[in-house]
Length: 309
Image 1 (cartoon, rainbow, N blue to C red):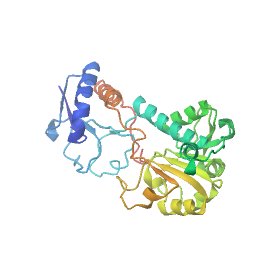
Image 2 (spheres, rainbow, N blue to C red):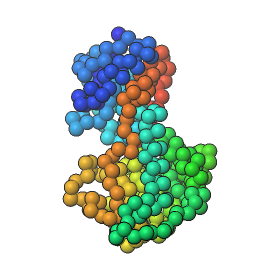
Image 3 (cartoon, rainbow, N blue to C red):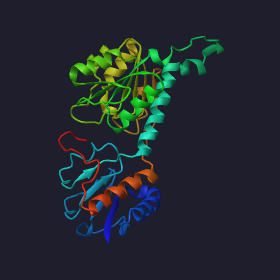
Image 4 (cartoon, rainbow, N blue to C red):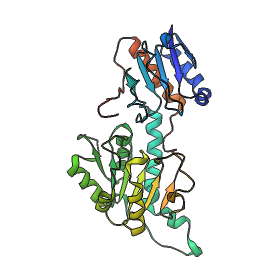
């Protein structure tokens, strides 16, 4: 019997218990899934960072900690975590992110805010250019970023993608390194942020790089809040350098009620909903990864502790 500790918060237990049990059975695992297992009897931990973090040190028998989230910045630096850590990569996350990103890129491309809300009920005839004339930059070409970049390219946008190391994505002009970053930022009238949060990416969009963007550009951030310097973004919005920003993630969540983003006419706030982990699809990934380890195979989506993702 394989003992699996569900340490992702009790409120998620109601969402995940049935799909996980079904997925574990489908994967052929004889598993005891529980909210409570003694550390010296636990073989696997299914985890999502909560307000009350656990001490991983006593769980010396654990073969894998499987995160339910794509982002692992809140756990990867935990000194007590010496066990292998896998991040969540699954079709539900990718599909959800693609739908949110393409929806908001199209919203900004088409000028839907102007057309749907017309002050004074004016007849505003302001057709958008065709997608093939619009440069859309995607910073981050991991599983989510690559899927979004390809979806935007399929809509005929001219998509530019940037990653830490050079990648190849069909239909996307790919860049890497400092020069590549400047190339994409300076050419993108809509810029989508899908990078992980690391020491190298925090405040990536600072005042200098916001100044590289075409005047009146748009930022869409469903990645991580600290990728953007908040004060620099507000200043760029006030000056007109940046026309609009749609933000799904923030340095502090929920976004405090007094934060300037709430009231700024150039900012759209969404409550970290761009791509929520879906229990049905994530459960299958977790079960399959545990089954791989039980068969003596390496787990998928292992986190590199040096890079932070």
